[in-house]
Length: 295
Image (tube, rainbow, N blue to C red; front, top):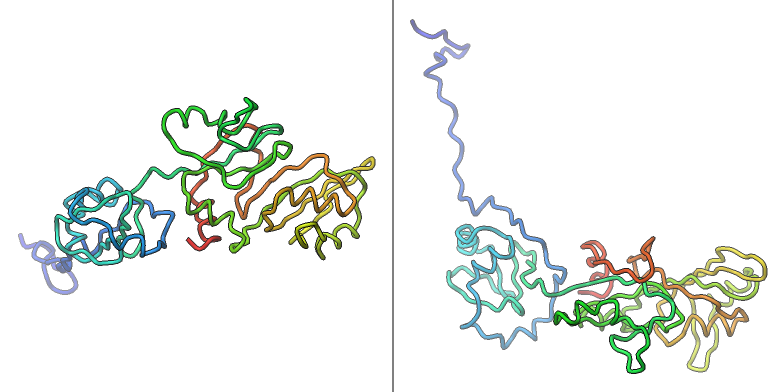
């Protein structure tokens, strides 16, 4: 029995579906790898990089989670992979994952997992050093296991022993140097408990600038959070990096500091993290820091 015809007059069994256009898998493949936190690098440091040693590029891509080795070879052949700013189409290229800059479809791929970034809530009384010659408690005590395991860490800037709060730890020297460099004007926010009941005059004074022995110091933002029983809680934001700058400004303005806590660097916040605890920065925090310093 002949199957019933459709409205176009073609029997159901004989009706052919339109053929789907064929495409190369490499044309539609989307990388699964995480983008590198550094998307821009100084090309000068890559100029003398050796090319005959290292790991095969397709293996590096596979280990970074871009694709399987076979698919990585297709991506290379399709011209979608760059190494140190040059498109690679030939198979078998060897690179040094620790120094090479690898991009897939223009996005830098993280092939070096050795960089680490932590936020420490530094407690009061802790020395801002990795080792203290006088045996006093120091930052190095908190990360002693990591240091003993051979992980190199250093603090980004300093907090004196009497100052608490947010301290960044990393082994990324370029990021650390830029965050501390006055050129980039990275903002830092503090909460200061001071002697005296502050009013709007203090806000104006700090915003207009206080003359110190090493020059004028201005706050970018000042807020009186609370006043009680002859004391005040002041939030102050500035991009200065001079030693004891917040304490000196407030003392010069007539409000000596009793307690000082750094709560924020750029967009990275201390939040509810407990004193003495360490946590890794998340991707959005790192992206924000790198953008702030042009990396």
